[in-house]
Length: 330
Ligand SMILES: N=C(N)NCCCC(=O)O
Ligand SMILES: [Zn+2]
Ligand SMILES: [Zn+2]
Image (cartoon, rainbow, N blue to C red; front, side, top):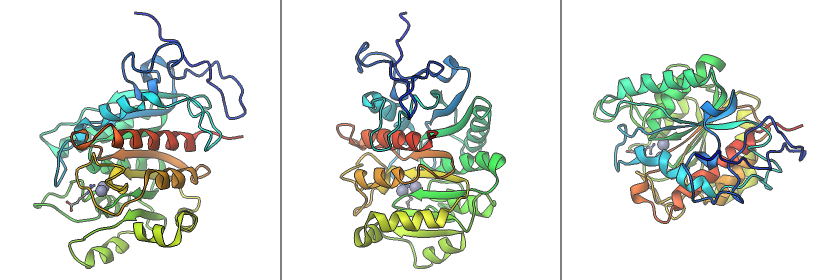
């Protein structure tokens, strides 16, 4: 097989060449639609000595309460990420040139046993920590945030969680099951994984089970920037509230793609009307570049309900913006 040429544009934010960094396949040499789909056509993790960021898929959706299919999310997002380009003008950064980013493939998670899957995901994330400083994880349903937070906690202690979602995901149980995609942040809070003074949901909207859901959520350590707040007060005010809440705490970002309006992300399992546009979400992420981001996930992309890759394109750009925000600056 031919070796795949790397991008000639592996550069840092000052425009300097970085020959030590292996970037994506050069789309001016090999057409974008050719070749195996790693995220953004980046090298595999086993092709580089060490990565600053590893992208890893978790094809697990046995924790869903409604439409299944997010197990196919990682492959779908990788496929849509072929079109990403090396320079991000919105953050003035070469996200794949200023740091080594590589695709670690998918973690194995037992689809028939949630407890075992959750153990496998935590262990898999910890093992990858030997080869990569930070992970950007593509799900999978939101259940996976619990083992990912357990892994992050081992290194960083309690972290601020910035959670983008239509849903609180601090509910207690479904059909008596404690570990589902509607419960990861309640379990994480109970286990002491999150900083109760610095965590925040963004984009919450839609019907709840009871008024007390909101009291429980506050007690579990979250403040809320609703979708309606963003409409009413605008993005600068929302960004200000988020940044004030997080401060300088180590930060884990969890993005449920259903935070976007179904018109921007139809391919998801529990869609809710009245959500953010992809433009709004990308703008909020750009405002986080100077924060101490220790890891991130993008979850709940379910390709069976997607059309024209609308949801997967949004998710791949969300990942790109996160990777850009994590890039070192002078
Ligand atoms: N999409 C996530 N993560 N959670 C939705 C849970 C909604 C419910 O069944 O009440
Ligand atoms: Zn959700
Ligand atoms: Zn969620």
